[in-house]
Length: 148
Image (cartoon, rainbow, N blue to C red):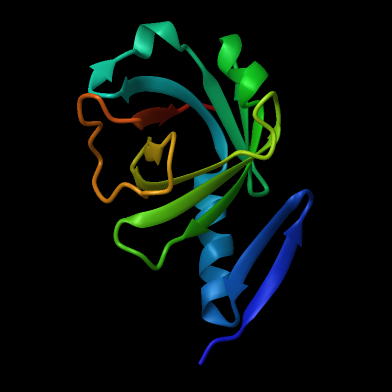
């Protein structure tokens, strides 16, 4: 039976299972690290990519947002990932911006140079597929890794 431990990385606190699970979380966060540019954004079944041109940077378990009004409200998140689930789960906690303290639940996938998040913007029902149904408060956000 695994025991839970708190891991502190800067302003991020991760709850991870002891042993191999903690190593899996660290390895997964390392894979996500880097600079990403928005490729597609759907919300409530509508493509709103052109309205929200943003870039993100993931480093040390945090996700920083740059670009337009989104950064004012959601400037920086602490990420908690669970690579053991299918689909993989992610939780976002806003640590900088007008929405500081807000928490969002979602799923994610990393495939080649594409990082896709599916996030429940309002409510506590974590999405279970990468879809943004019409009228929902679910966002599907696709980022492409920036070339170095």
